[in-house]
Amino acid sequence: MRRLLSTLLFSVALLGGTLALSGCIVVAPARPGHVWVPGYWAPGHVWVHGYWR
Image (tube, rainbow, N blue to C red; front, side, top):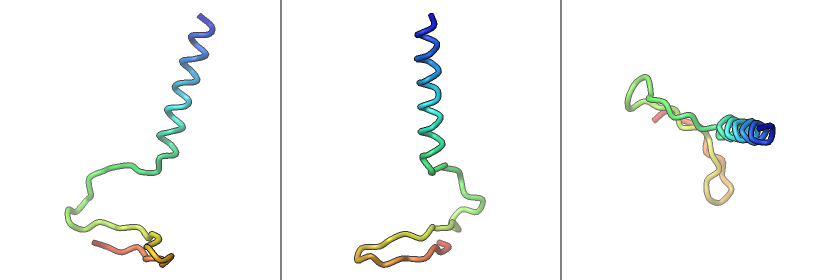
């Protein structure tokens, strides 16, 4: 019983950590068609700033 509880606690912690570190939470935008696109590194090591789309 103790081993089962330990395994279950570890599994819940692992799942929670994975969700916390995923960094991507999908939600519907407040106004369709007007969303923020974060900055990113483009090919050729060029930084593209964030912009509204």
